[in-house]
Amino acid sequence: ERDLFKTGRYPEPFATLYPATPDGRVQWGQGKRIDLNAALGEPASAPKPAPKPQPAPAATPEASGGIVAKIIAFIVAAAAAGFGAWFYGG
Image: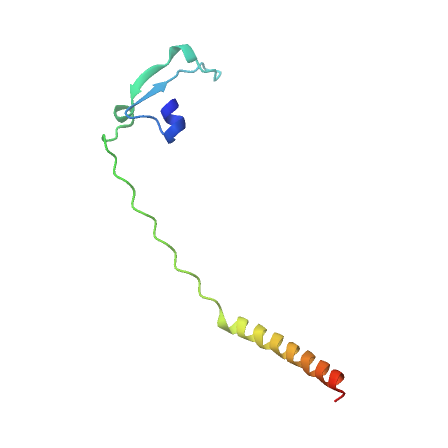
């Protein structure tokens, strides 16, 4: 259990199997050590899974972003022109 806490996995190749009663209570005093490789049918050194492919970054939509940017630029320019005319008396 110490190795499980330290490394996040049981030390190879054994684990303790505890039986349970039909109502689900674990019988802690009747545990037995089993060989995990034999119990799971896996080879002694299981192959590592291939790394997951990285998704391509999503392209930003130029059409909608361009229209919004133009509208905001127009509003800012109109406000600046109106402020300039008011401030300079034009």
